[in-house]
Image (cartoon, rainbow, N blue to C red):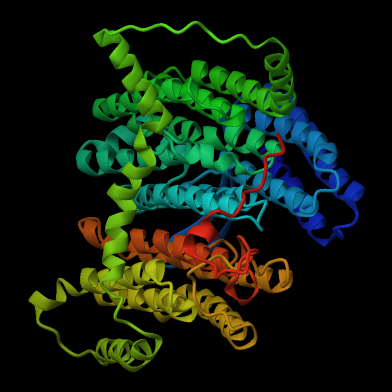
Length: 640
């Protein structure tokens, strides 16, 4: 047990380094870089020392039950850490690469305006990465999973005054959140399967898993498929591959550590961590292998026609990750781990030297370029090759496919509520909600036929509130209010479904009320002082009001249930009251929770990030600004 406590240092050191970096002034570049460098270095040293002692006990799997955050008669939210050979490989690779990236970045980003933000975010990412790979249960893993999603958004939007990085950061974050639907539903179903907060140590017990799955093959298949959805979105597997090149908008060091080496491999990690659960489900293994094979084929073709070196490297990395999916599906755990280490170090090196490689290639082509002789062929093979070339140039229209399959239907649902205004919400929807809540509290007897559909109906209304916020552009205050109402309608849905105690409701709504009201106050202040109330364009107020932007970002995180608010535990509490046969209710709740995060981040981005509109709505030529001119704002050039 004493050795297991050492795991605390692997979490505590990055956390301490991150907190210290927050209070260092932006002008202290050398101190900021040293804090990041020594944090990564000390943690790397502690990991290596730990491995020596761990080898002394025969590489035995270690589990550390840290503490219980919340407990009721039927529910327990505990923080649990687990260490085995899979975690060991990821922790060591993460420590080495973070150490190298912090050393490289201290010179590469010298005098960059976002120097402090970069190191703050990298340390925040490193904290989330360690929590994810050392997590001992799904709840702890989800804490790190959420931190990784947020830090990814912040790093892609590093050049936050420009339009293209801001738009691409929202795209990346949106795909991440869609993958979260799978992880949330997997957590919900696993609670019903195990009737406890299952740890990964117990999950590695083959007899226990076989015993629980014996009469529950359906729910076992559902959990495995949801885990595959989460892993595919996080590792950019087909059909989610299109977000990876958009993520390259950030500085080259962040591209290296995120999308070349560490973050993009966490889908493989999730499959490895849960392998004992689904290893006997042949259908799932075939699906994982087919997904990896499809990704490898498509990514190879796309990589060969890219004009950006960072995009080429990104798709080349996806090809290898697709092969890792095949290896995991085949049960080749050791080979997958070795493959991960090789690919992570190779892609990091390639991305870090890419600026120099591009310079050398440009000089070589300038002095020694010779055009190839043209060949004219007219055969079916040549036509097929040209067709694949064109499809690969268009990246197989994966962006359009995801939009058509996922986001466009959700937008159409949200537009159904375009008739709503801020006043109509205050006058009609809030009183109707209060009436429904009063009838529930007073114990008014509802016919059983109606009572059976009310929970799913209320949850669908909550989802509509979120989708209305997602599509709302006329009023930032209305969009934010709809997000607030989503939580209250969701409480009503669960309270109608099962006894939801006042303590549990208070835990869930406490963070919602505090952070929701703080965000509403900031939006109202901006409307009265800046005259900005709509969300039609990116307003770029972060440069003029950085403190206000930070406070609003905290409000966004608290409202969406990030682990700075009791709502994070409340969401898990909410799902514990959804029965295993209420898949529709669970789906509505998970989708509402995930889409709320996307909608809230979009509000933040449109109010504070992106290109600043010209004064009096005119561009440099003195003509009125049009949507086409807004979209033509020049994006930030890559560091490479």
